[in-house]
Image (cartoon, rainbow, N blue to C red):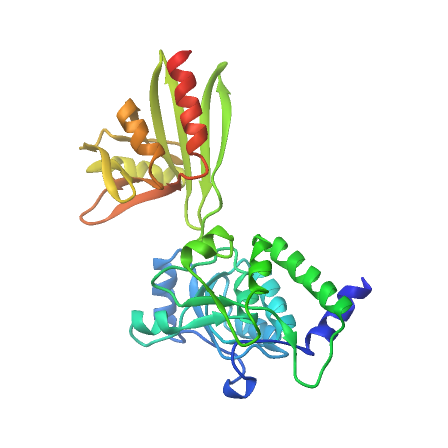
Length: 356
């Protein structure tokens, strides 16, 4: 406990910034103030509002953030960071506050009308990356700004012993682990010198679990229904849960691709479908036109298909599978499943089906 109490004192003598502090203003927070605009945006994104955080993370940033959220009665939000860094301790405290609220994080900047060039030019670097790690869903792609990490170091005029550096390093690793980020991220950050920065590509950030783009890793397990085994795969996303079942009957493989919603919505999607289909890495797959390809069962909409050997090969060599139901006009409803970590279990189940 003594180490934890000392951490804040130590780390304020430790720099974790991408550019000199004098070049940046303390972090401020902004969101649309017009109630109609807020309501429309929240409705389009399931109640999630946008908060824009720009500037250097300084002592008191966490408290200013919480006061901002309370004053505007925000219940769900995505925090868009544009920050070069600042106080390491305050960045971690801000990340903890964001996690306690269940908010999302991204890298971007506010523009009155959407400007993708402005977003891509924004950054969340150094101490900001630790605040970003607090998001339950953490978004990073080619369309967002950049996420940068580097090592912490003693600020000019201060000294930190090797023992203190080791203790601070251990606390940082523990924080990343609590946020669900691979501890390798800290090891990578130490490669950069104080004046340098390692910019994580979206794929690198996903690999380190720094970003998750709103999705947990899929989980696969063998279940029994009437003593008959089947493979159940589930992946939770920030806006929907995907549930996929692989079943074997008389050595024939079939698949049920499910999108978990609620009984009323699932019935509505199934009743108004014009076609249903799957996608593999964005290419349409196993399309059935009309209103018979998808069925509702309680809170799940199921797309059921027979799976041939050729279909199976396509599935296990793809990165992402998605299920879609076309409804009114250009409106469609769907969900996705990331395949890399569950390919082997799909292949093993299919092999057992063919020889059983």
